[in-house]
Length: 94
Length: 91
Image 1 (tube, chains in turn yellow, brown):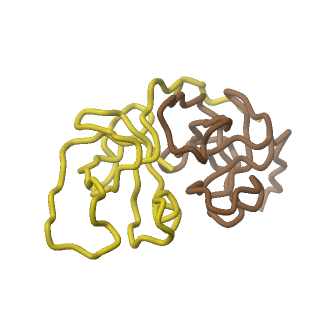
Image 2 (cartoon, each protein chain N blue to C red):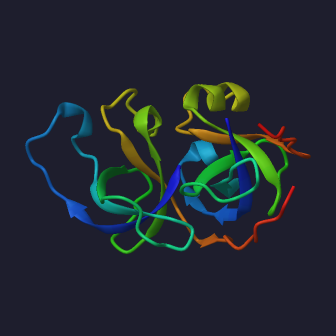
């Protein structure tokens, strides 16, 4: 599960049955400092996220479990809108 | 499983119901010397880990669902243990 920023929406009228009626959002995965990591991806929204929202996502098989109808073929789903992240713990030897 | 350092909590009031009641922690994967390796990820805490702790994190959904006893949860990573220390034998 990873952090991301919603950059836009994706509209596709002809698509596989499983993702009909689902909102598709364009998401840029980011790291703890909100620096982009890797390419943008298209994720199914399950929490009414909007453009500009700071979100967290789950990928691969777990993404399909995030949708009510069991096993919808998706591999990226927004599962939370992030209010705050405390990413400041300095490295500590162990 | 990977060694990781807990950076701190991720607060999200609006989230998928499967996450209700769980603590989300942002984790930075580390090597055996504690140096950062790769990109941070989010894990559900299952070991009462706290900020700055070194932990053992699993990033595979089936184990997460079994450990958390949530058959259908869209949860992929969770913290299985807080590590006390790591002994590295010189090769």
